[in-house]
Amino acid sequence: MKEKKDSESLFAAKYMKDTTEYGNEEVEILKKLQNCDKIIDLVEEYHENYQTILLTEYLTGMKQTYLD
Image 1 (cartoon, helix red, strand yellow):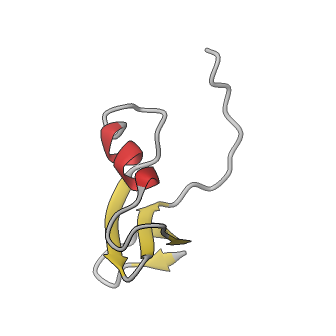
Image 2 (cartoon, helix red, strand yellow; image 1 turned 30 degrees about the vertical axis):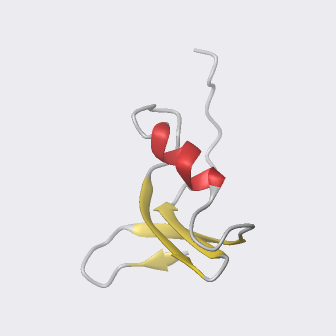
Image 3 (cartoon, one colour; image 1 turned 90 degrees about the vertical axis):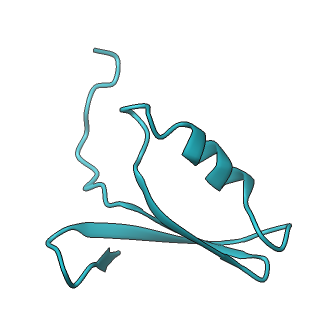
């Protein structure tokens, strides 16, 4: 979890090892689904040397009913 110094917002970071030098299939799928209200917001992505870091919105874990 990371807090940007210039705002009150909290963000989550996910580190992944990749099979390709630049890019990640999960990131590409997440980008395509950004218009869906049930998908976490992608804030930033970093790729380098077979590694990816995703910076996303932070979710508190509150239970919600998704079948409504």
